[in-house]
Amino acid sequence: MKDTADTLKLHQGLARALASHGTTHLYGLVGDANLFMVDAYVDAELGRYVACTHEANAVLAAIGFAQATGRTGVATITHGPALTNVITALAEAARGGIPLVVLCGDTAPGDLQHLQKIDQREVVASTGAVFIEMRSPATAIEDLDRAFRIAAHRRCPVVYNMRVDLMWDDIAATGATVAVPDCAMAPASGEPLEDAAGMLASARRPLILAGRGAATPQARAALIALAARIEAPLATTLKAQGLFHGEPFNIGICGGLSHPTAVDVIMQSDCILAFGASLSKHTTEERAYTKGKRVVQILPDVQETPRLDTATLRLIGDLAGTATALTELLDMAEIPGSGVTDPDLAERLRTEATDFARVPTAAKTAPGTVDMAPALRRLHQALPEDRVLVADLGRFVTSAWRNLPVTRPQDLVYTSHFGAIGCGLGEAIGAATSIDDRPTVLLAGDGGFTLSGLSELVTAVREKADLIVILCNDGSYGAEHVQFTNRKMDPELSMIARIDFATTCATLGFATVRVTDDATLDTACTAISERDGPVLIDLRLDPTMIEM
Image 1: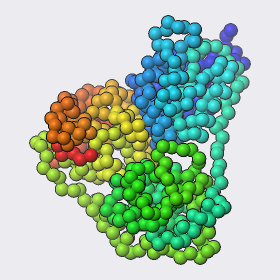
Image 2: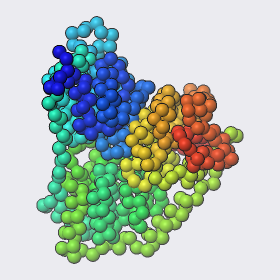
Image 3: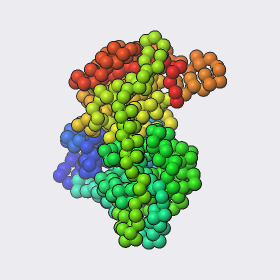
């Protein structure tokens, strides 16, 4: 039967449904189960298709897109080995609470000898992602609508399983997608809210802590107003870094990345109001920062995660509304401010800012290498203040987060939910192709960068991405190098054969600089300011001089 005004082929209907769900960027790698759907999406100009060279990087790019934009990321892959290739990426999204829809092909159920046949439901289940079966062509759009709802409302990855043998079946052209409904939540109220206000009223040194869940303009404004009312400093988790940028009593990150003044303020506090923060061990420094304190945790939903720590009191409700309600209760009771935000604290914070503006003195390293922290600080000064930071995992990562801060939470793309190296490049491509008013900066180690697939660099070049890669190249797998050296063992097994990344990446279309001393570091800074395409800066580092 030919297509008529009343019918579409299934692959065409799926492409249109993606556009109806606001899919402006589709990341993928085509195979026989998804190529016609992708072709329909591209041919009808429904959005931008970003073709990747590996399925894992396609899904990681969608994760990077989701973090940088705050929207559901969408990727597509074919079946069998394509799905097994993305297990780590799906686990990363599941652990991170990333809204993601992956349209994945599947073999026909009766084709028992198909080379790529596998129980895809079981594979997906192992990652923590949700599996949605396309039941039939007639229900395909309805099933896809459900996948988008689950991804958005549960903040999780969803694999939409679509059979290859049904792609050319007819479906009704009149079937419309159902938009994902907004979820409105009321502020916390009643006795729990009054108990929280009571704890605040009796606190002498309160502190307001915001997590990524509070990274909205409304929550930011309400928390700043509450902090001013009770005269409390403001802090964030790492993933909410930059939320209070520019505020006079912003002490920065609470956790292992806290500067000395922040550590003093946190340790001296007697009541912490944590908005939208899971209070993971990294934020609380294994509970050292919360021990002996009253902790009021306000969360925007009831979703449980393994990272949730025990609070003195937990409230569920709209974060901005709850902060405003607390301010109103304190006003009604005429509770005075704490006085913590005094001129002395303001001066100490100004001193911290002045110290950070200075490049630290470089330590002596092996010939042909540079000291990482001072080099990163110089590059920080050369980069635009507004940029997206994607840091792959490795022993360099805390130095990356500390020396290349961002000024708003959505500009930090976090790749370390599952503890896997090599996720950075894919997520950086997702961020760089979705954000066009500021550069994306990828910090990666040589091990993770190699693992992520150098071939994916051609995707960044083809897409004309404003991407700056800073490669922390110490010639080793850093964590393993530390394990060996700490036990006085030969670290040879942790060493990586030196790759000439500058030459290799230049052949793929990157502008490259190999940094081995102060002069070439200056050259790298110039390359950043004069870039007209992707840039790679190969920082040659001494593996014996890098701290975890």
